[in-house]
Amino acid sequence: MLISDYDYDLPAELIAQEPLAARQESRMLVVDRRDTSLMDSRFAELPQFLRRGDLLVLNNTKVFPARLLGQTETGANIEIFLVKEVSDATWEALARPARRLKPGKKLIFGAELTAEVVDRSSDGQVFVRFDGGGDLEAKLDEVGRTPLPPYIKRDHLNADTDRERYQTVFASRRGAIAAPTAGLHFTPEVLDQIKAAGVEIAEITLHVGYGTFEPVRATDLAQHTVSAESYDIDEATADVMEKARLGNDRIVAVGTTTTRALESNLSEFGNFTAGSYSANLTIRPGCRFKAIDALLTNFHLPQSSLLVLTSTFGGHELIMDAYHHAVRERYRFYSYGDCMLIV
Image 1 (cartoon, rainbow, N blue to C red):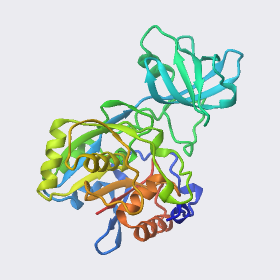
Image 2 (spheres, one colour; image 1 turned 135 degrees about the vertical axis):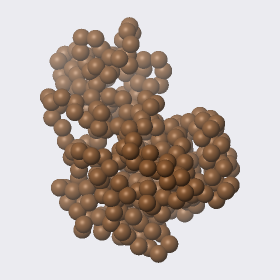
Image 3 (cartoon, rainbow, N blue to C red; image 1 turned 180 degrees about the vertical axis):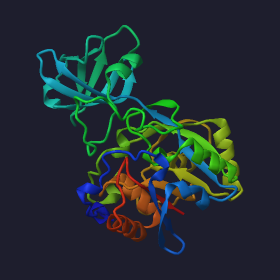
Image 4 (spheres, helix red, strand yellow; image 1 turned 60 degrees about the vertical axis):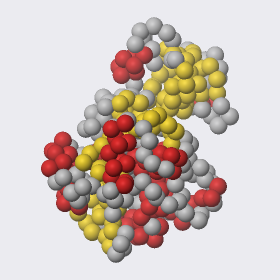
């Protein structure tokens, strides 16, 4: 298939710029693959769509303030977006404007945080090494900003009001540069209701990185690959997932990152296996899902790898119909928007 087959028209006003005051009040479109039906619902009603014996799997990654605004030593304004730590105090980063950041350039992000450009790649990414001394994590927390997607507009001069809200309530392991947004709808109360309904909850960790949102550059999806991302599954989680798989209990993935981690793990090992691994599976048409039975996900950008993944799971025609329905019914889209449950 062609990436152009995953296009749809979205009015700009449907791109959610602010989160709802109450997380659980998001709308939820329920997509049933068996009878190809669509039903408008609310996320607060999610427990009603789960069954006793289901296993709900969350991604407990925690977003850190990876966006840094500063100046070069000559006073030019620059912005870098930390992507991945490649060695102690050295990070791969996206930069704007990248052309100014040549090796040797000094960067200043405040009195307590400076860095030097040590290398740059052919595709415009840079590698920066932060000056030693002190707690780098604490310094990033002090001067960094929440790494929001570019379609969410914020005034750089205002306070970073998204730091708490652009985070799931179960986030515990720091390392993501974007939130696993399907998890943003949960509250402790909803999680308690799910447990009370006889649904087990497990957690994995996949630190959301650039591979999750990098653009699809291939016209033909057969030529498309998604960059690998590291993930962790502990022994207890692997055991409970393997028990669910062997017992034919439904595994309900919360988010595309959880899906990619579980499908990569089962595809590589044949059973759920604990450890730290690389999710290098590109999910595209023709992929057979082995790990998950249902998926909770937000609405994704046109012609994106996340929309390809979602429609591969739900069926291309049905999911594109669901997106057109969501546009007609004025659902809120993207990170701070509403969600879809595919069963």
